Image (cartoon, rainbow, N blue to C red):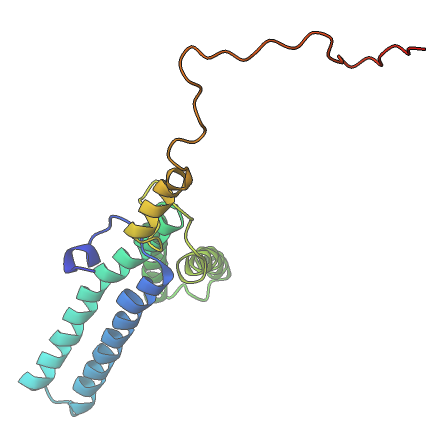
Length: 205
């Protein structure tokens, strides 16, 4: 897989490509980001400003976090394409999840998080986003893509050689010159007279 294909929203990918080319590398990047952030925070003494190295670690962790968003969206959308579903489901999930986090933060800042009505509304919204996220998780991580072509492209599990074989195999099985053709002007012979036509023949003494 080239870098252009890795960053492109077009096409489909299977579960193995999703796990090995997108999910596991992003997990490794997240681990590096977490380690860099923890190191930068732990090195700063209370009441003292961070050094240039500590600030550099913070910038590096923020940059890696931003750069990892695009590949994760690309991989998830391609997996939805493999399931013959629109990639906008990933956009909807991301938008709703971000909106829920932002709304919860705003409510907490205004001190209304303990209001029963507000809390019930947030719980309902969180339940809806959770159901959508669970469905998306199963779609992109567990289920196999549609077999053969769909509206987003060919099956990623079928190699070009296999696709060519599937297209040409029925014709290749047919032997040349079969079925045999009758020579030009040839007609089938007329039925013989006196042949039994299905009724029992008369009895002779």
